[in-house]
Length: 263
Image (tube, rainbow, N blue to C red; front, side):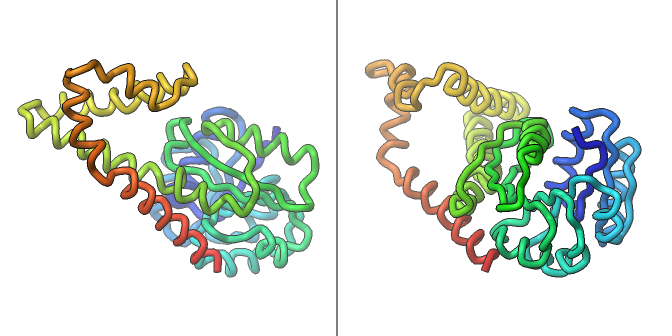
């Protein structure tokens, strides 16, 4: 396992990955650079032994693996700053193609990943793809680092924009649904904390049940829908609405934006 990991960019996703990696692999040294001093202060406060600074080049020199955790519009500047590196480089910049990164980092082994913010609690859902210079040992390192933060699966690069729309942006969309459940519960007279706890556990329990049993969603719908019961009454509202199309359009819009950022 690598012992020195660099983060060029200390935003929310970079911090979440750094935290889960250090929690899973004690003794790893994190090097991070960011233009925002407040972000560096967060790393210093939360992670033991972290090395902070403002120079991407120094991070690239010190680390065995480099995460590019910057916004797509900032990627070119960062690539120029570390253009001589021959390290394993893992990019989480949405929409930025491996070919573009490899065209500047001509000696680096490049991986492109689309993680999501639940990695902060070890519950990430991510897709990743490898560049052409990747070595067999790099594959194992990437697998270990990503699985420290949750679930990760290899996909073709052309599908990473779809991963971005579905699971990369997905936590925000799911949070909106949970928010609606909470407000509905409050509107029915439940205390705010009770409505929140019941809503969170309902989403968590449903996902756990489907995941651990392999049950199809429709099977669970049928299981809960007793004839002439409460669920059937509620479904008469939900199933006649345009909810499926709204969700489809939401995820598609996020995917299209990922493609635009890449261009």
